Image (cartoon, rainbow, N blue to C red; front, side, top):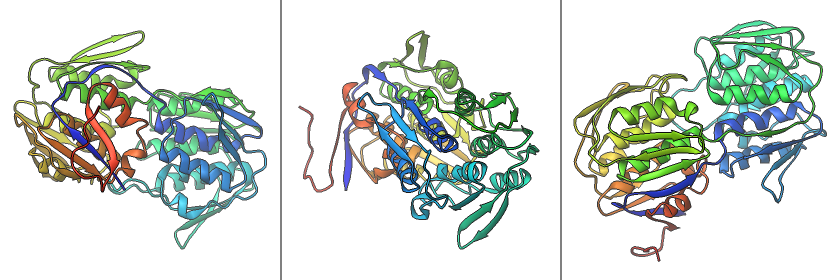
Length: 427
């Protein structure tokens, strides 16, 4: 078991390069099972969620390996089983999309109920209702969905909530459905758009991505393609918040400003200097931050995955902020960890009321989930004294080279075995 140790108070300075998007990779990789032949994916992040997903693919007979140049090659020509390893599927939500992919290509699938971060109810009813509307016959027994479909049929689908996961799932399944499928009230995130571009690059026929209505015309087959995973907008937001909370000056390279507009706008609103250019985003701050109110919403609203790091930032802003979470009802569990560091946060139902304090103090804290872990690391960068962060498996799910990148920006931070005594300073 390892911990992250942070000696806070050092302004971050320099450049950080953003890697591939976790959420994009976890959508594109399952889609590759629709294809016979070798698909080549560039900019895939080396994170534990990706490794688990590739392990699932390999267990089913696919070849999935990183080349020496960093590209990921996937060959799903010789799938030997449509039954997924249920113990692995239960650990990560994105693997549930294999249900529709396998039904579309093989007409048969067995996939367990998904897992993931404990941030509230994350039902799969939108997924199931959509697949059944496309003609799938599904049976749920002992925590496992077993499905059959001679061939899926195009249909008009309406999502009661613009779920990113359900939109991606149904879009992939509909690629092989006979006729036209229309998904209304669908998600509009950049990862949805890029998944559609990937499927189209492989011979699919999808239009409307990035709008509330997506139309898919079914095809009989898809072919391999070489494709790029987009930069991770949530990493961009996290490093931007880290630069702001430490009063630093950081240039974020390989970032798409349009993907991060809600976060960048809020940063400017509270007193952070944001400058965008062709090669990245520059974040700096000199004065004290100002309070603001935030309400998380599906894209293009403020992203729920940035709520947690932003609350850490607002905990040292002048005045009282209110952050309302509308997507996941249990996403404030991490606030107890920030309170250990001196944050003044009161959670009332779906809303956190944050009264800014002049200074946070280091403390032993634990990651409650992926973005909650990022929030307490961000807080530790600005806290007085040492912060020790445990339960790092959550952070490993979504952040590649997190500690190394922060070190290169001048943070006094190190990852070390739990039993290491005392403070381990940087050289």
